[in-house]
Image 1 (cartoon, one colour):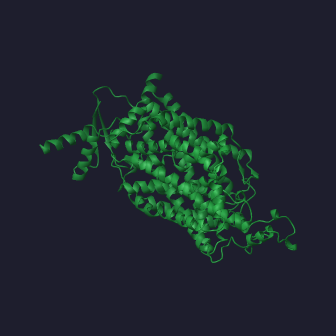
Image 2: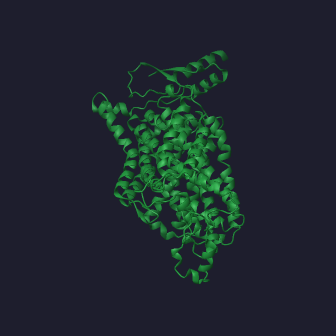
Image 3: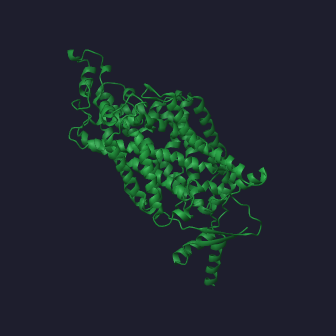
Amino acid sequence: MAQLHDQEQRKDAETCGRDYEFESLPPVVEAPGEIVVRTVTQREQWSSRLDFVLSVAGGFIGLGNVWRFPYLCYKHGGGAFLIPYGVFLLGGGIPLFFMEVALGQFTAQGGISCWRTVCPLLTGIGYSSVIIVSMMSINYIVILAWTLFYLAHSFNSNLPWASCNNTWNTPNCLEDTMRRNLTAGNMSAIYNSSLDNYVSPVTEFWERKVLDLSKGMEEVGDLQWDLVLCMLAMWVIVFFSIWRGVKVTGKIVYFTATFPLLMLVVLFIRGVTLPGASEGIKYYLYPKLEYLAYPQVWIDAGTQIFYSYTVCIGVMTSLGSYNKYDYNCYRSCVLLSCMNSGTSFFAGFAIFAILGFMAQEQGVSIADVAESGPGLAFIVYPKAVTMMPLPSLWAVLFFIMLLLLGLDSQFMHVEGQVTSWIDLHPELMRKGYRRQLFLALVCCINFCLGLTMVTQGGIYVFQMFDYYATSGVVLLWVAFFECVALAWLYGVDRFYLALEDMLGFRPGPWMKWCWMVITPSLCLSCFIYSLVKFKPLVYNKVYEYPPWAQTLGWCMALSSMLCVPVYALLHLLLAEGSFHMRLKQLLEPRIKSPQRGAYLATKAMEQEGTLPEKVIMQTAL
């Protein structure tokens, strides 16, 4: 009897399994009763649930949690900012995050082919996401190169950005200790001019030593060879960390995902013990409800959610595709969402405690020292450590934390990028060392493109990438079409059936209503407002980008955004048959609702060693 039951399970596995299509052919509507034979290529999976959780946590708990959220919270009304942040978190961030992970797990495919599977007409979503993450990885590695450069100089007993007696300093350099005395009123006859004419050694180290800043994009200048070597070292680390696949990467993140959080706790403890820390935390959290009337506060809250949750760039879909089919990704997504937003909130205490100390030491307001982005990491915090006992120790700990936070995110960016391309032709790319060779090619191309950002004019190129190519506008565009594709074209009820089959239970109706109404409405309204209120790019509030540079920036943004409508239009024009038939074919999903029993039977065959490397799955329609 047991033997008969096993035979029936194996038969179910062969006839009712997950119906994947890896071919890059247009969808075909089969006639009733036709037998379709398809080949399933074996796919790598996470070794354990913890591998997936830590990989995702490392991927989206990154630099933005440390240097962007705390500043936005302070800038937009302190504790009041948590209201729009919570609205976008519950109405956009968590639903999109869960949708992408679950979609990857359901289809077991990367960021491009998953959309071709559920809605061929909008496959351009996947191409758009991959272009965005490709540009993001080029941009992100430069930050890691800067961080490594600072870390290497942090091991000196005398930090090079603490004094004005270096070769790169100018006569206008004024050490912060002397500036503090002058600010207090102890004006010497030597310093009889305004303090505005003087420059901090931290600023000169950043602009004259690290960047060797030119006057604008018109002056590209020479390569900064120190930064070139740092960027090369970062790409080598990224390559060897992910070249063996997710089974190895999942073990590396045990250290790279947890150690930065430990360092953040250490910096928090150190920060709150400094004089003036309470004032900094007060500025960070004190609620100013009148700020809720400003639309920009809500827009910044929405874009911060999309940045910090790493959605709309194909990464979460690719990571979810390595899950087992019956993995409870819903529970993990809720846990990871709490971890992500909690880390952002906690990081604000550590950062603003130190900013409060700086403001008290310099005798200025917190508004004069608060910065976001690279300004916080490479100017404000390096200046803060020079005012502490054991400055070299705290500099090393801070930059190690930044380096590991950034490396985790870079691992996932490149993994998502590579997985998305490989899953288009798995039968070709998953043989031998072809994946490793393709990964090496991607790293080399990205390294060469990144060289434009480590020249004397590289910071202008870096900011242009950040402002246009990976901006909140392009993420909102992709998020809107993701909701349209899954909730309206594929069908939210159909996807809920798949979720129930995978998870063993049916999620509550909140996700359904978010995917159908709330999330696309939030995305569309923010997208329109961002375009209406768009301002041309300006560097450091002084340098205005020339028209040709702004045009180039918009071309980079449109290179990803236009993938969605252009792909749909081309396939509608090239398909055969009447318009109605073409549209029907391109809206027909390429995956049928799987059956949990068939999956369990297949897993049993794998454990017994009776499952061949390639299983022919015959589906009777």
